Image (cartoon, rainbow, N blue to C red; front, side, top):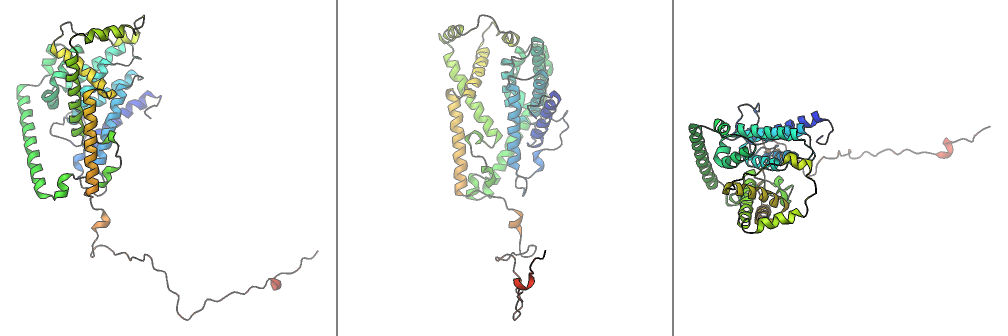
Length: 380
């Protein structure tokens, strides 16, 4: 259905993926559902549910969100499909703050690498939609607490004025309230971790993993926790960004320009002319770091640089921890058959179903058949 030629089917599929991701992820205190009609969340399901796997639902939602981001990075897409995917990503990030970091990266990448199939008017429409979604997200606590600098730089590149950014920015009272909520949430999490570590056994202290969590043991899906994966990816991008910043001085940049001049075509492609944006003339440190960060994303995607090596090591480390916990014995939730007792359950005989015994002394009668007596010769 994703590759359907019907544009309407693909648009409604984006909304369907949005519903799956929001309903199969937990709601936090910073979730903004003011204009979204989603009452269902993963908070309504306990982690120790007998029939429904909490972790599998969350993993499926994470994979669906990555699939949605792949639609943004596709080079062969239409305007309506791209805008519907872009809107779905923004709505998910507003409802689930753990996806805000990936949304900002996806929007930066889309702004720099728009599909070549779009015309000049369509490029303006996509960038206008990007700007509007980012302006609506400015008041989100996760944005102005962690990503406000990157979002403001991206908005400036998209053509937003300072007055627009100030108008959509949060008030000081909202900022202090969000900071207070964040501190309370961190303190509550620390208290919960301390109380949990004092009540569980030594084996469960290491890793509380279910046996069903080991269905897919590839290194690519080693991170089950979305927060841990985001932290590792952020650290990898920061390492590669610093590594590129150290090498942007001197004669490295002119040499790269001279090398690329040899591969440039004689005429400017129309797709490049449509998606090209001018870098500010005043090259401040923030502008250089923004360019280095865009390059770092490309380096990590290709598996190059110190950040990619760090991310691979983190995935390998997490994978080995899971394997070690599985060998030592992971905690498996009880099934309904394990909950049976003598009062409410029925004990099954080890022999299974019993075969009925024939009465003693009776003999099964035998039937005699004489072929010569039963047959007669054929007559004409």
